[in-house]
Image (cartoon, rainbow, N blue to C red; front, side, top):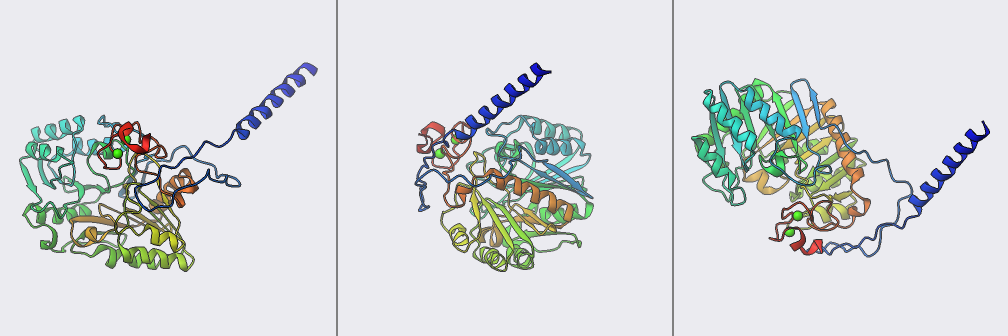
Length: 415
Ligand SMILES: [Ca+2]
Ligand SMILES: [Ca+2]
């Protein structure tokens, strides 16, 4: 008995010492690389917050409610893109292709070859599935034209300066795959943070098909009409004909009572930013997570939001914060291809789904809070360089995260 107590005593003493060792270590030296913008430079290591909140290590990436499945991708876990199609979202896209018996209509902004996906599309065509494609042409997505060469029934956006920015597919006129994710290696691998909806509804499919048919007939951008049904808990809107931000998003922000959370690639739409500021000033909990490539770029509303007291965290991971979403009051979820910009609203071809679904809204809110906790508090005030030491994984992922032509060790941020 005595011996047992002695052993327990030794173990406890060792554990206490180990804990002391862990806590007394000095904080990692923080030396912010000056961003290319006018963002304030961090001068000294951040003060330790009184008691850091517990950090979750992961968050469930799929959630289904009725006929809608939400699929999220977690850019804090995958720090290098690949084309192996192992992510949840890629497996889902692959399954939809493999299960299709008659038709696939795809509207694709950007495409990169994922061998399993290409094989599945070829197999579908061989078994008689009619595949049609509407696509954009951008030099950084050469895979799109390779896809168009495979799919005979394809129509290209005639004016690539105004984007065909949709990323959706309709399967057998019954299921829709849509959201913020490009059909690229950084998208489908789960390297970027994205939000995708798989909607198992022929009404929703018809709505997307109506939009597809217009573009397939050569009518893009301002030449399209609004002619689609909506239902109470699921509204589907298209740019530019629907004026999505002004007519549909801002009114929901203006009606928010509890919170508005925005994981976004970019915010340059002034009236949208103003609606967030107004919500904050009437006591609504407003939070924004913005991608690191452009928080202070031309037209960005981030400085204005921050100076008005809206907490905006710039993310610090290699992949993009590419979600183009808004979560409101455990009630609404807004997900689409559209950035919160004037070109997204007024010129490009885009789609946005507005769900009134408390279960999905709660789930997405939990994911936002999980990301928010993972991103350090100091990035409320400073912006980590998109490619650099403070952007986790960005110096070893083999890609040019911040579009300056320099990859990993070539990039000054990684020195
Ligand atoms: Ca770079
Ligand atoms: Ca890199």
